[in-house]
Length: 448
Image (cartoon, rainbow, N blue to C red; front, side, top):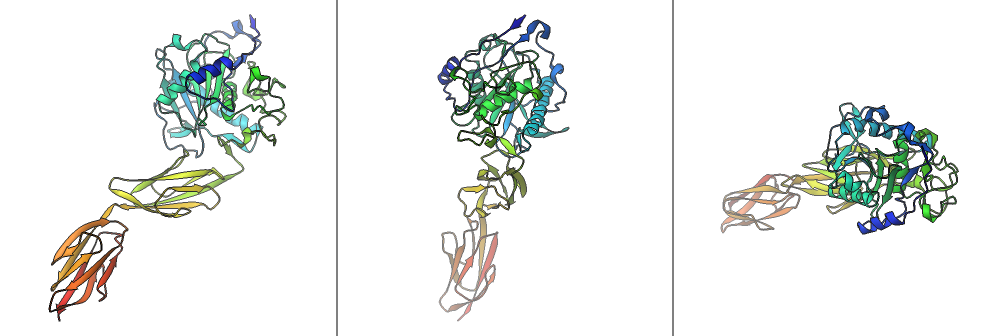
């Protein structure tokens, strides 16, 4: 039996998105559908191993592991199941890993200067996908109808803490749905957070890698309305000139290698026109424009960036797309503080830096306070410029670190000040102590 499907419009799904508090823009959540597929020959729900060639060796996690091993705006992979669904990540993870590797190789073949920036982490077998498992609150039957499913997943990711404006999310939904000729959906909200859904138990025989890549491009904003071969409004977000184009609104059971990334380079990728170009997306690694960024950390603290991929507790070097703008956050350990930034940043306020060849930043941490001890020989007094030290004949106090303190002597009647010893020296009545460490000073008085 062959199904030739009619393309769906976006209106119903956009209405669902708005009802769920999302504002879709620059992309499209119209379902990607299959055409001309003989369903009887393709069989029922495929066994997981039938689509996997790469072995994923990761472990189940309900959180996004940090830091990412590849710096920059990432694409994070999620395995999602309904509340009553069977957890098959132990084997489906290999399907997702296979698709990620296949997509990466295909993209580099289409454009030698770009590659998807997948969120990877270090496992025993090497760097592989950092996959988060999300169990949705709704049951299989509640999520089976097309209407509302995409919005439910977007909200579920938010509840799970997966709603970063710096991250796109590729979700493999592992459960049956009513409309099993809908292969996937994709879109972004106004913050930049994007969701690409692959319905694993739908479109049997269709390349899940091709579906994931198609929906991922939707999260980047493809296909913009200014594109020459943009489909009519009822098929917003697709091209209609070439069935082999990855962004054609329907697909066949062919491998991703049979697809082309904007064949004419005139619609959404590498076109050079006035409308948005997905080749410029921050979520792609610019293989031809990488720059190292060195961060030097001294003392008890760490530094993180707003863009995932940087979390340093000691001196480290990470690699970014040149021109990436980073907001750095200093994180002192308990009882410590950031003294100052150095190199590309100054002071102890917020640090913003643009990655470029030779760019570097240093961060100096220290205990919040150091102890200053004062001893008097003879008769006299020592006082500090800020409250704490009033000595006769010895005393000590804690002062903020790296905030200089001035000590001043006053001789008793019949005595005179001779010299400082310890952290201070000389015979001047005042001594400036830098408070860069715990220290002590001795004031020596003699009879006049």
